[in-house]
Length: 93
Image (tube, rainbow, N blue to C red; front, side, top):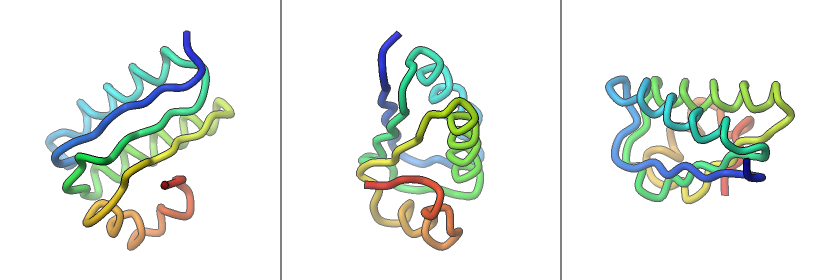
């Protein structure tokens, strides 16, 4: 077990990829005891399915007293987070 962990996203996080990404993030998250950082440097597109994945991970981590951080979030994915108001919940940097 390690303190925190990082998961990198790239391409599109949409309905087609959401289940696989959800599983991947959570598999990594259960192997660490600290906060989870998602590096969005390569993320080009984020739809409502992707937003749901991020919020589900956020809620599960919060229930464990842990945090979710999104780094390198820019362009359309940042705008999607902002338009939905989810940026009030998810820490970005």
